[in-house]
Length: 311
Image 1 (cartoon, rainbow, N blue to C red):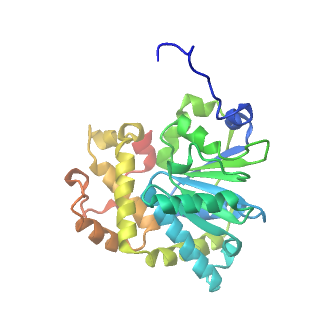
Image 2: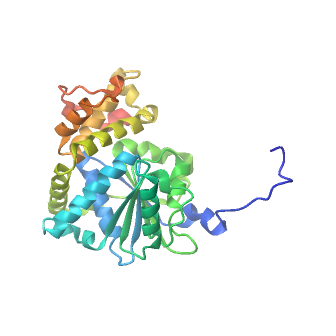
């Protein structure tokens, strides 16, 4: 196309939605520690789902992590129904939906229609298949779990809420090693308020302890294949961000993916109690890249503090 003389420009966004990122309330929480991250997600969901008409979208970095946390929350729903998770009462009135590229097209269409037609009491766990071109009315909050690929992806995800003059809000949950994302100039220009983790406000640690125990119990019931696939997806996603994470500069190593694997092992021990089963599932996979294999004999508990790796 040499010029636009023979074409009409069609605006599929509209002025009201185009500037969502500049006016919608946004917050960011940076979590330190492997257990705190998952527990904070549950705490933020409890807050987002407190209103009877809640309609929440949670974006994850990969399809397999979307699957993992969807199955984890469904497991927590079962525990709550059995009276084993008294702090998670919101799950009794929230339907968990799962959509990502690993699902069939018919499943995705069915779930998308169900979430679109829902009038409240619903939470959609999704990968970026829902970030663009999907019109879900009345979304009350968008939660982004993990660092988006870039500022544009953050904005597109956030644009699923506060549409057509409706109210909405956004929350970004980062691990401490993902704090580099906040240094992006486009992100710095947005009205993002930094907040402390909600679970950190529990002075006695009792609530965090109970939520963590419920998470551990639900995770133990997950299929090893789900955990193993999530681990591999974690490696694949962060492998593309080694230089931004500066893991390739760890302890005078110019480029060493084992530092990434070290973090993967530490992180998965936090949210996958069935870690050894996950390792066995990965060991049996023919698709595991040799250069990303981990040393099971190495003790990663003495890994250098994150500040030394990302500073």
